[in-house]
Amino acid sequence: MINLPGFLRKVPTDTNRPAAELLAAAERLALLLTQENLALAAHDVTRATGLVGDKARALAAFELACLNMHGHLIADELQRSTAETLSTRLQALAQENRRLLERALFIQKRVLALFARAVARAAPTQYGAQQGAAMRQLNALALSAKA
Image 1 (cartoon, rainbow, N blue to C red):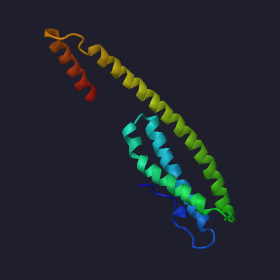
Image 2: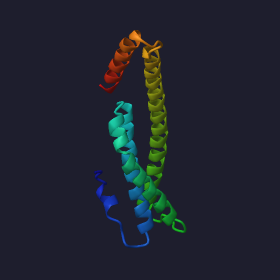
Image 3: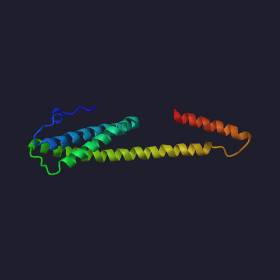
Image 4: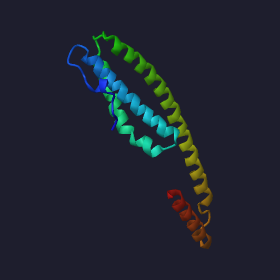
């Protein structure tokens, strides 16, 4: 669970509410992108994929908050300054996230290609007595791929 700063947890009931909700949603999305980027940079795919659901919900909340801002201005100077800072931060985090995801996909494709070549080399090409030895090699490859 992500702990939001105190000023983002309290959503005022006045006319600044849509802006406060937008800022809270933006901060949550930024925190999740930061966590995912750290996981991807560490090649921790398990941790990164564990954040997918939270990230999707945070993005949906952010989109809804953006829609709710239609027709509203951020009048409060602190909120406006915070919004500008978060906007810059989100752009940078999103660019880094894209770069890291593309790198992870590239690495995954290379690993899968290595497995495919290894399986193709180990696949039996003959029937008969030699097939048993080839199948044992293929089974050993399959077991090592799980480890």
